[in-house]
Length: 293
DNA sequence: AAGGGCCTCAACCGCTATAGA
DNA sequence: CTCTATAGCGGTTGAGGCCCT
Image 1 (cartoon, rainbow, N blue to C red):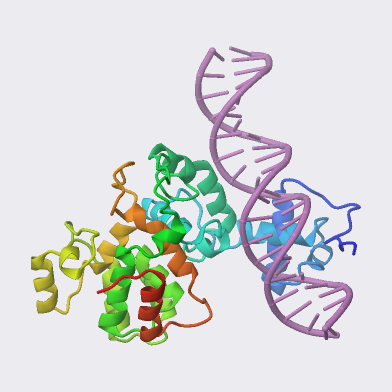
Image 2 (tube, rainbow, N blue to C red):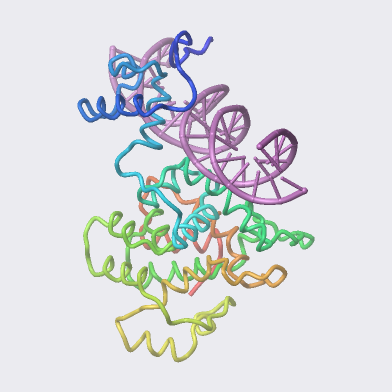
């Protein structure tokens, strides 16, 4: 079947937009709103393809677009989300207010990719470039190994008996309290706690990644946690697990980077449509990763 | 000053997903 | 169920600016 072209080829202008064209598009959308892209160019007096108009609006003219350099926090968020989601630019863009998928994609390809390479990290796999897989411990086999961050998520779910969904967990991992709030229907004590965790700092600077709760936190930390409702640090620890800041190629065993592959697998294996209840959450961890408090 | 190479990013292209007739 | 229109996504391209020789 011949594909229907999105617009007639004759008389259609291509290339850079002029300020006059931008004005016409803005004025039309302000009057009539977004949508109807196929008929929009004619109605707005533009000799452009509807698709081109949509893209121009979405990536450049929309009033809520944030311009200017990416912040360190944004860099960090993109890297972590890329490790979790891969080249899903639109999905990543939903976590960065005011940034478009196109902008993030360009920024990744021109800046972040290089930066990771300079740190000795493969930007595709998020693993150290020189690591050879001679042990046969590929992602499939890693599945049965322990995952520190999965363990913490397990603890979050167990401890606070919260229905965690995928976006919420992503929010926890990248430390974005907005997402946590957005994805929680009711601002209950759990939401407040998760928000607090996502914005708190300090605490665990000496966690290890071997199995077992006591090795995960110092005795003092465990004591502090049991004494206080203020469970700060859990979030920082989660963030630390997915952080590249201290990555040293060749020293990855048991480090955060070793967990990226199974982190991705277990998050990706979740059904986006279904909220995960506590029981399902724990059993999914048990069956797919095999970790546990 | 000229020009060649590199980099950035807006825009395009081809494809898939989805809604509605 | 099928077909078509539309929206949206990710990869790629190319114009223009910058830097170096």
